[in-house]
Image (cartoon, rainbow, N blue to C red; front, side, top):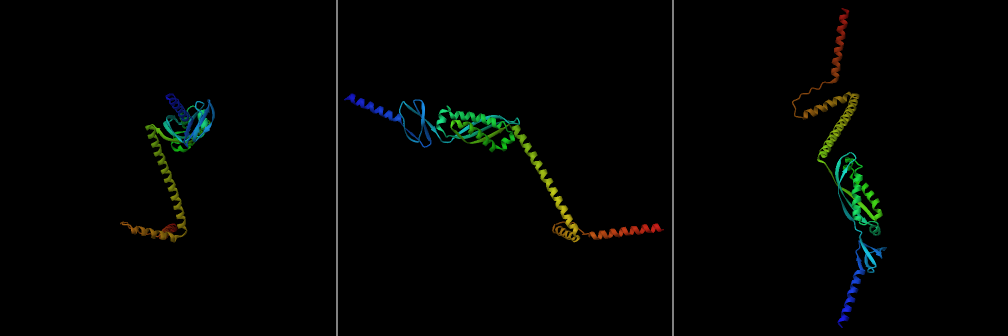
Length: 264
């Protein structure tokens, strides 16, 4: 009787162990790469998976987006400026078969490839491009990584350069350069304003010269503006026609005196 109970107990334990080894449950974001006697036989999941113990093995692969922090890299730009750059990469597995068979550790392989690609791409650009065209650099790095990791069943969704650290002396040089650039733009804007003002004054002078009465109206308008201000300045309008008349009289008197002396 005792031996019968022991036998049944052992059978029960073996059955439980068999079921525990044979039944696998995969979540919605997981896939199972199945190997039968060491050979790839398919990808299963999600849900309930039944395996043959000791004959079949399963490797779980997570299909969710993974975040990989690329360590800080020392980069020398094309204009020979030393900078320290780090980045973050977002990728996911789209082919569990290749991610398991083609590469031993796709996380480490992607990390090493990202470091070398980051140094290679940024080394082809100048410092100003690193600071101003970061979106373009992100796109270039993403395209290169996506093309090279495609054989591993990896899809690189996005690459973001986080920090570009520059030496403090270079920061001061960039500040001086930016200040000089702002002064240059200010001088150009001032010169363009002077040119436009001169052009408008020329047009106004041409218009006023066609109608003498317009000049008188301009005089009156100016007097009105001056009168409205708190000033002790006295302005006496002197007609231009009167100055011309007096100048004509002066020239006439001079000619008369010269004629008289000649006759004498």
